[in-house]
Amino acid sequence: MNTVTLQVQIREKIRLDKYLSDQLTDISRTRIQQQIKSGNVTVNGKPVKASYQLEGGEEIYVVLIDSQPEPAIVIPQQMDLDIIYEDSALAVINKPAGLVVHPGKGNREDTLANGLAYHFRNLSDVNGVLRPGLIHRLDKNTTGLIIIAKTNQAHLKLARLFEQREIEKTYLGVTWGEWDSRTGRIEIGIRRQRSDPTRFEASNDGKPAITDYEVIDTFRYLSYVQFFPRTGRTHQIRVHSAHSGFAIFADTVYNGGVNRTKGYLPEVRKFLQGLLNKINRQALHAFRIRFKHPNSGEDIQFEAPLPPDMTYLLSEIKRFNG
Image (cartoon, rainbow, N blue to C red; front, side):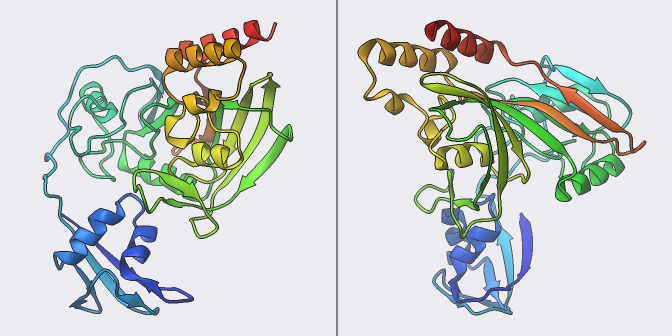
């Protein structure tokens, strides 16, 4: 059971369930509505309906009860971890595709957290026992670098760097289409979709989000792009790319799948569909990360080589383009 207290600060009236959905982005609107209906949400000490109109100044108290209680600890599991760097304060891991970062509903084992619990003697517990050492995350099918905190002191300092946008991250991705500009900035908010709370969308009503980009190479149908997220919203690069019309290749959630092959000549469509089947995940990799060490204050930087599936993807694109 988790509890949250919110002091409402708004400029215009808004439904209670909508407001909570915007504030508690890791929780689906459906689950929020269930908690409201069960009486686990009060406004100024009184239970209300999901449609209750907030005017500003109210105090909301939320009790989140999981119908499937989470385990008290993460079960340690032996797994091969690609450790890029390690010292007494932190470690940097190169995460493979298909590996979920931490346990959740229906996914209690075989996560990165399980592997971390097995491999490391000490990890921070700032984010709770189910997320040992975890300060940030990567999507299941995004590869690349993730920082692990070994001590609570290091965790809090690194978390502060994330909050202050002082951790520089560079992603490499293959996108559909040829970008209009070689460099640019995508600046539009991101919010959870109302129709499907597991997905996100670009919206001026969403939480502020900024992604800079630089096109490395352009081919006839696809582009190879560097992304520099300046904020850390869930699915940020994927949502921003799709919103700009250049969805990440093979990202079936955000219009980057087989539907994009329609309209091409048969031989081109066959080639692109073959690549989609081969990579079978969004072509996105967390390539570089730079930050100040939480103990020494020294600037440190790490890189993770492009994974084999993306290396193959790029080589095949170049070959097909002559």
